[in-house]
Image (cartoon, rainbow, N blue to C red; front, side, top):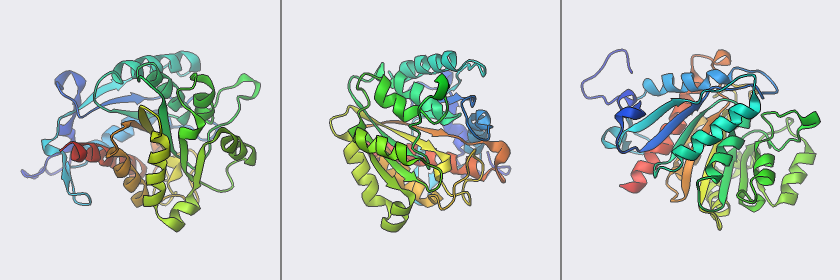
Length: 310
């Protein structure tokens, strides 16, 4: 919390509490301190801790959206999944098991990563609990539909795996990617997504057109015929000027403002199941600004949920 406490301030440290203290939750939080499948710079295993520390410095009122979380139900923090850094499959199994349990609650789920490969076991856990298809909106500079070369799993596979390995729970037509950047993707994977029926919006298109129409369209596509929608945020979609603390800092990526606008629109949608924020790597950060942006995105999502329910 802030170093000097004003009696009129309501710290987020009072909002986000250990799960054992919370009876009715605004959301359930779980951390995934794992980055073994990272292809580039590692360090996102420390993301959950950095995100929690950043959250603890925030206050409950946001002037941008005029929402005060001080009177909202508490947020239940369930701690971190007990991961095994040298065992990908076993760690992913544990993630899916925990997510399946937490997703059975009426409250949305907030996942703190960890590398982006973890989004697949998160979606797999949701598929075990959610009674119907799931739409996915990904905010990322990369397509993350890589093949597993020589059987090796990487952080670049989650959405290919989701479309191919979940028995139709995630259909290509319900997958939307926002913020894809330049010079770090393969045309082969763009064509794969096109053939799968997925929609791709580049960072350039979001800058040129603004986020509102693209996000509205993304929610429409992801929600078409689905039971719920998951929002996956790879913080490397945001320009390195706003988010340097990640494995692959973006050139001409999204702004912090654009990210928060997307989180707000998503949080107000009735089919929003939850959100993950991946690839925050604090050892590469500057003054904690990337973790603070991630924390702001999470709080904006929670504020939108609370505001929509009011």
